[in-house]
Structures are given as structure tokens and as C-alpha cells.
Image 1 (tube, one colour):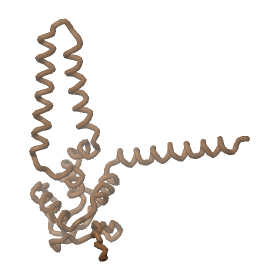
Image 2 (image 1 turned 60 degrees about the vertical axis):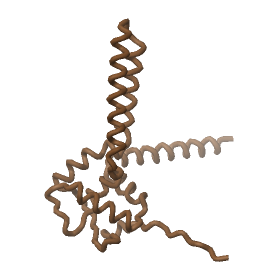
Image 3 (image 1 turned 60 degrees about the horizontal axis):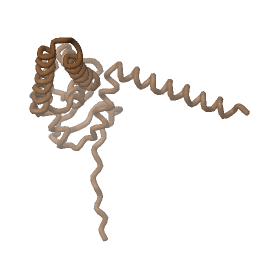
Image 4 (image 1 turned 45 degrees about the horizontal axis):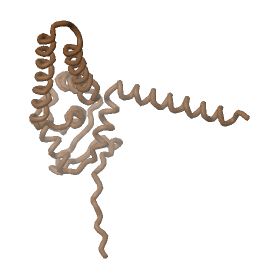
Length: 180
């Protein structure tokens, strides 16, 4: 019986400082962002970090709940809750229908550029072209998460805090095990 092998995703060699897409384009990594790219980066941070969208959704649900369960003006509370929920549903529907690439890929596209890319202005069409090339190349999604995690300062702090807590826990367990 012949064994079928599944091709592995292509991994980015970050140490090389560049890679080629299936299109033949050479991609290089920026150390810093030009102004227009930085503005887009700032807009993407909350979306990539996942927190703000869920916080807003939770806040809307909380406001609707409070409108329905507090106060003496029942009809006014129901109207407010209905408006809040309708607006949230509209926002989710719009977001889902926009067929945008994931925020992680869009953020990575700010830091990974072609040698001939115009860095004086951000162009979402160029971002889409780069992402399509990466998809056609079969690059592992984890590499883009890794890049974004390195570029978002709060991710670094969360990572450091996690490992500090993990070490403290490990040391505490060792101390407890050493005691007779």
C-alpha cells in the first residue's frame, strides 16, 4: 500500500530576513513602520489582540440587560435594549459580510513588504495581493501570529507575566516537595 504524504505548510525563516512568495516576489521584514503604516498598525492592534471586540460585545449585552432589568420605565428600557442589540447585530453582520482577510494577516502585511512597495502610503489592495500570494505559497498561519505577537508590546508583557507566574508556581511546588 502506498502511503500518501500531506505537504507541510511553508515556514518563514525570520532569521534570513526575507522570503519569496509563489508569485516570485521577494518579501522583506521592516524593523520600523513608516507613518501611514503605523497608523494602520494602531487601528489593528485592538482587533488582533481580540480584547476590544469582545469587550464591546459584552458591554452592549450588559447595557441591554440593565435597560431591561432596572428602572420603572419598562417601555423605554425595552426600546433602549432593542436599539442596542439591533446596532450590535448590524455591526456583526457588516463585519461578517466584508470578506476581509484576518486582522493578523493584515497586520503582518504592514511589517512584511515587497522590495518595490511604496512605503509612503498604505494601500489595502496591495495588502490583499500580498496575503493572496502568501495563501498560494502555503505559509503556516502560526508564523504570522508569531510576527504579530512580537510586534504588539502588550503580547510581550502577557508572555513575560505568564512565564514569571509559571516559574513562581514551579518554584513553589519544588519548595513544597522538598519539605519533609
